[in-house]
Amino acid sequence: MTKAARRQLGELGKALTSPRLAKAKFQINGHTDVSGAAAHNKALSAKRARAVKSYLVQRFGIDRHLLAIHGWGEERLKDSLDPNNPVNRRVEICNWTRGVRPSNCSTS
Image (cartoon, rainbow, N blue to C red; front, top):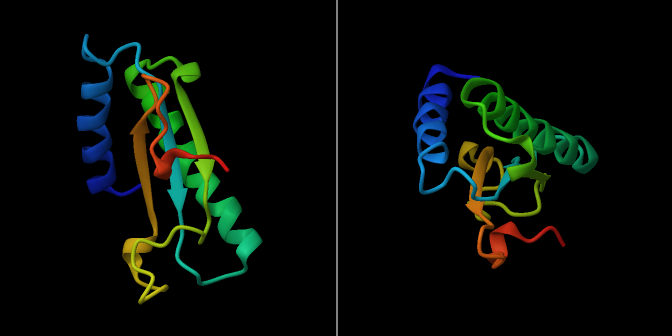
């Protein structure tokens, strides 16, 4: 994990442990670009999401049951015009607290 990623996760961890969000549920979504086989990318994206979850649980003591993960692989490119663009390799998090799952949080 890069220094910049750890810095971003530090800010996220502080927010998630605030009284307002301490009991909220979140989904962590991993994504990849299209380089590599689809099955490999699916596994890699899940690994990315799992790494973020582990960091937040270990570093900030967030209840692991409040954080779900999903690896999308190359299914949801941020830049579909350039499928190998590094912006496609990312992790996103969304709030499930109210039971409303935005389309980027769907697991189907």
